[in-house]
Image (cartoon, rainbow, N blue to C red; front, side, top):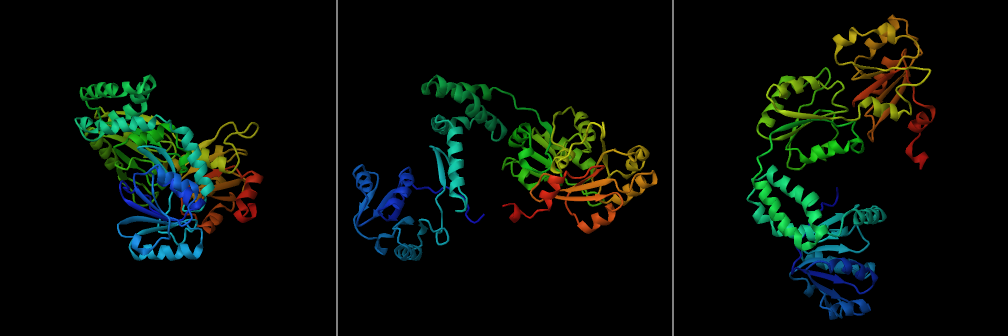
Length: 464
């Protein structure tokens, strides 16, 4: 992130702009939405500038900008559409400690003006670091359609009500009140007329003041394979409401970013055959935070019900009469098989699929390897990289064909996904050569579909 987004207080602040043509007009249409004192320097101003001065929207100086105009200025826009003149004026402003924007010159600008969706006092700013203005405009158009024009009046009324709402306890009680106002009570009242919103807000406050605090609760949430777009709507909602998020090692940073900024984030990652957080400690954390009244999200990679030790954690919260529910997620096998263009089952090939974990070696050793070694069998092996040689040995011992396809998918669904296509005979050697360090899922009995294999092997520049 080269440009950190902030919202500057501009009321009665002095903002200067040098230029009187189209570039200046484009910036001013946005700047005139603020309450800043706008000073424009243009020896030959466009007619619109004259009209805007007559309407009291800005102060027009029919001369060139000079260094004497800078004292007290907050921002300076160089918009003369003359590279040499813009650079000269920008240098004067920088020397005076005023932040500079040179129109259409990202490299020499100290700040950029984003695309804006205006639902005053709600403002959405969209920036692309100057890389894709067309994309910023498209996002703006999409948000303009999604955000109702009534959002502004609702927010203004809510802003005026904040001191009364402070009667509610800090934290969840206030969040629940404002969530209900903005997403239920407020819009319903606005539909009946603006004058009905404030009385409805007062009634809502009385209801919440009389309401008992919510008990602590645990949501066991499947975080999916890593791609945030594969997260379910229920999972997104749970993360948005969580006071505490207790998450696994394999949860991607992009998904953690979706949690509330104020939420307490606790990493309880377990690493196969390596350092890990004791399960008893995880159970204790769930109980401790839920008993304090927190809404806890236990965020597990993939689907919480698949190799996630879910039952142990449910038993722990049940033992303390703590409420809980499960939010399913997309398990790694579903994402990984989609990544190679195959299906887990196929008519005429296999009517069932086995889900195994290479982490639990005792259970792994007891598996029915003779049945799996038969032709056309399919298995999805979770956390199986370090047990690859064991898998190979057991299957060959029970008569499996050495040419049986095996596919290993690292970081399934993520931008850095890698696919290794090999055979049972070559699995340990090829896996070692691949030096995979991310989470991986192994498919025994499946090879990537040909078209997908070609796409995976083709450099991006050749696809462009």
